[in-house]
Length: 92
Image (cartoon, rainbow, N blue to C red; front, side, top):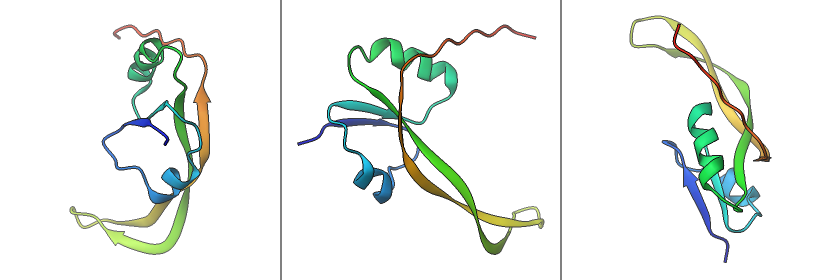
């Protein structure tokens, strides 16, 4: 049995779930500052990031303001383990 903590506002896609082979891991889609915090508190558990590419579908979508744009879908391309992340920021 694999146990993975999924941290995201999006549901994991069937392709991501099928491709996930690492047990007892944390998989996350978060802003970089929160990823840095997660890496610190995850301890020895691997922190995984989903890799994806944007693929144009060939269809056009109508936006609420009346503009049109090319529709894209995100295609899952595997997982990467986050090993190190240093995040420094300052107000501007």
